[in-house]
Image (cartoon, rainbow, N blue to C red; front, side):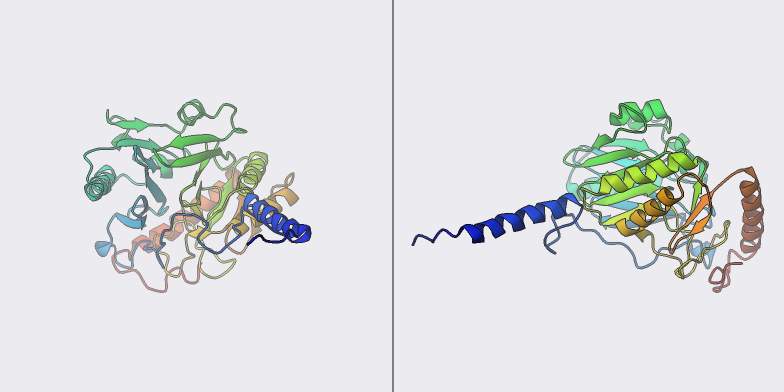
Length: 342
């Protein structure tokens, strides 16, 4: 049967399809059907550093999905408790960051890779180590990887990062890391550190933002660079889906506008790791409103925290006091520690 031609009907059908395309280009999905994003699972809570350090492994390993792993360093090892990311493609696996302490990491990562290969019934895969940025708490175990012949090691240096990821003009252009059937976009985001980058995983729509965006204190050494980088990140997400924004630390409690003091090794009732694109947009809006005037601003899940030598001196004092007190009871930490930061 031949359907009658109704110009108005077809006009609205075409308009609806065009609008759906516009929504997708704005980083929104037209239907609640998963939008083709590879699914993953985040834990209800992470371990931090206790309450009993004798029971704490140096690393908490979490399988987001079978090709994406998140490692958290225990506060019993180092108060920074950073998160590391291990992502597999068909041809290569990449580790982002090497953590803060000096305990063993390479064997833990090798163990995950070995189990992945066993699961996939494979014998080998290429291995790259790179960094979200070059601060000590993200490069401390580089020596466990950078002298291995089988490891492609990318130091946190601008020329090395540009070459490895094809970034022509730093920090304007966006590079890429090809893992084989999986592309990670590499977005330069200096401001917290001169060689900071974010990674966007196209398969899971996870945006990994290092120390530029996470639930905690966003330490800003170069204000104008951080303003521009935050805008670059926000602009990047306009045409892309974002399932989670995952940084490298948690310093916020689960109470809005309330943080743990620097130096906390144990953080019960801490904020979840994951933020949303909305948190990034809010941060960008505030940065744009204050682009010429560095100031400390507490948002619901993070604090904009410009730094100078006086600020660092005060932070070092607080860190020493907090960590010293908690280390005294690290093998039997009071459960109330951190719920009402001092």
